[in-house]
Each structure stands twice: as structure tokens, then as C-alpha cells.
Image 1 (cartoon, rainbow, N blue to C red):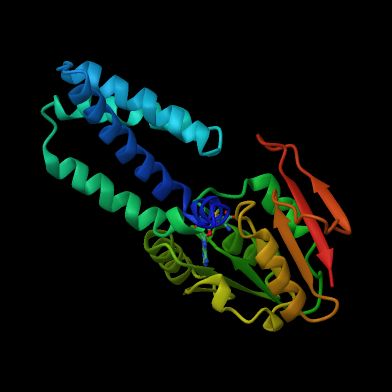
Image 2: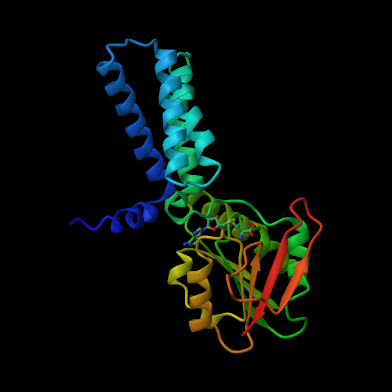
Length: 259
Ligand SMILES: C[S@@+](CC[C@H](N)C(=O)[O-])C[C@H]1O[C@@H](n2cnc3c(N)ncnc32)[C@H](O)[C@@H]1O
């Protein structure tokens, strides 16, 4: 007998966006098959709506996160509407390239670009050593705003950032190079390739997805007495020593662990 338990496990491991795309194909083929079976010839509008409804239902059945069914519902109808406009194809190519450079491997990492608020940066300030030298790393440093902010408030520190998305990396590199931030550096590198033993403070603002693996990395590599601080995303079953509340728009919390 085939192992029926293995399949859902593999499905769950697919990046959500790939699963969403497969479900779109499945809905498309189902609508074509249904139309042929019942000898129907729906208008393009009805066809697009049927695909959308089916894709949303499949998404729900596949237990995708709650924001996927509405996206799936609107995807083919929006495609149909857009194809009826006179927007030159190059606009879509440029938009795609911009998104690619900005978000890069988000479809796989499930860590998109969004920025720590000013209130979060101010709360972070309070956790850094006041007088002695130290090395700080922002794991996924985005546009470099956390690094440049802290380099002003703590000139005795050295602030490192790693970033994989090309546009944020180039932006932060230029910002640091031409903004005169002598105690900041940014590297085009995955956070998984960094040796955390070199840093006194590691900061992350990622997503719930990598937190368990990141905790393992912190536990294995960071030196005793170093700090790990996560903006917004906690680590399951690892209560932090300190939680800092901020009154920014999202009421972000900073979770602080001392090794
Ligand atoms: C939510 S943003 C945080 C930006 C910045 N740290 C801040 O707090 O404003 C997360 C960033 O991590 C980057 N990222 C995701 N996975 C990464 C990885 N494996 N290595 C390096 N950067 C990564 C993303 O490209 C994104 O720019």
C-alpha cells in the first residue's frame, strides 16, 4: 500500500507560494475539464470567476494561511482584467524586476522586507552596552536603518548587517558608504552563513518561520553573556528574560535573551 501519510507532509514543506500556484493550475484544469464534461462554453469572465472560486476553495482545503484564499480568489479574475487593459508589457516586466530585487528569496524564506519602527530602534538603544566597545549584528538588515540609527547613539560600537535581497543591500551599502557611518558594515550574505560567536549582540526582525532554527544557531554559536534580541517574533517554548513593549503602530515587542 502507498504511504498516504507522507504526501501531506511533503505538501506542507512546499513554499506556500508554490503550493498556491499548483492549486491555481489545478483549479484551471478542473474548470476546463468540467466545461468539457458538461459541454459548456462559459464567457471569459465566468471562466475566470469559476477558476478563482475553485482556487480559493482548494487553498482553504490545503489549510493555507488565512490570507491565501482571498488572494487565490482574485488572482485569475485580476489577470483577466489586466489582460484587457492596454498597459504595455514592459510595465509588468519592470514591476516584476523591482519586486524580485526587493524581495529576492522571500517566496522560499517567508521573510519579507518590512522595517523596524523608530520606537523599536529607540528601545534597542537601551539594551546596548553604554561605555565598552561591542559588535552588533542585524540578521537581515533590510535598508540598514537599524544600523545607522544605533551607530549614532553608540559610536563606540561596531554595527554589522547581513542581507540577501539585492536592492536593500545596495541601498544600505550606499547609505553607509556615502553617509559617513564609519562604524557600520553591511555584507551581501545569508544570516545562516554568519558565525554569531563574533558578536556581542544579535538582532533579528524576521518572521515566525525561521525562529526555531535561528534559536538553535544562537544557542550553538553565541558566546556566554551575549544578547539575542528579536523584534515581534518569539521563540516557541523559550521564554525571554525580558520583554520590552513599544507604543508604535503595531505595539511591537522586543524579546531579549541573555546567554
Ligand atoms: C523584516 S526585514 C527587517 C529589516 C531590518 N532588520 C529592520 O529591522 O528594519 C527582514 C530582512 O531580512 C532579509 N532576509 C531574509 N532572509 C535572510 C537571510 N537568510 N539572510 C539575510 N537576510 C535575510 C530580508 O530580505 C529582509 O530585508
